Image 1 (tube, one colour):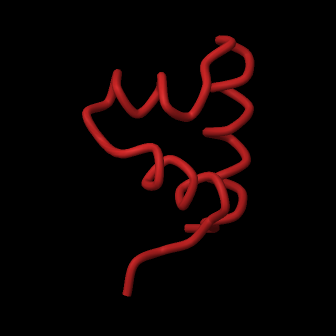
Image 2 (tube, rainbow, N blue to C red; image 1 turned 90 degrees about the vertical axis):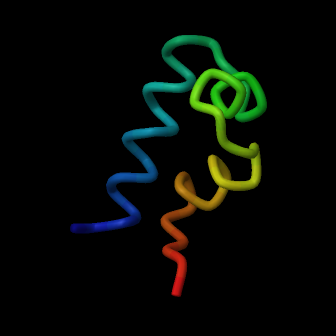
Length: 45
């Protein structure tokens, strides 16, 4: 899986729905830092 493409997809959907990273994080029950990492394509090691 291409983490960069997945991150761009998440970011595009978030913006289409006019959500901030904080708002999306609250909806998903994760931190805004997690959303940021997802959107940047940073994978945990």
